[in-house]
Image (cartoon, rainbow, N blue to C red; front, side, top):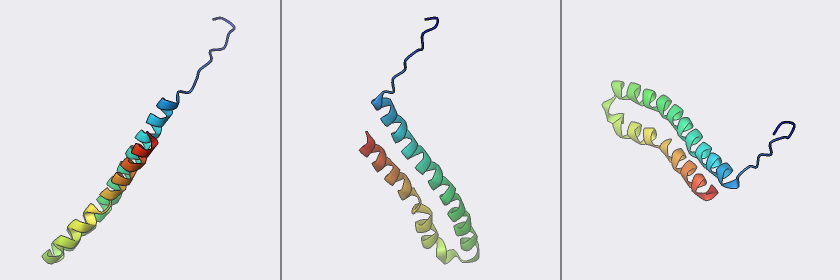
Length: 78
């Protein structure tokens, strides 16, 4: 193959897999970053007032829905 260029072909199934992986991975990373900030604030609020446990728990769980949306997008891609 000296002097010849190697021809590569993009496989559509591989590109779909990369897109689905990016959808789930990046949404999981963003959810983790958001949950870190919300969790720290919720712990600080609960240290002052223990009655805020329920609200803190609900607000901590909300960013996890972003991962579910990423999973739905990944399933739609594949």
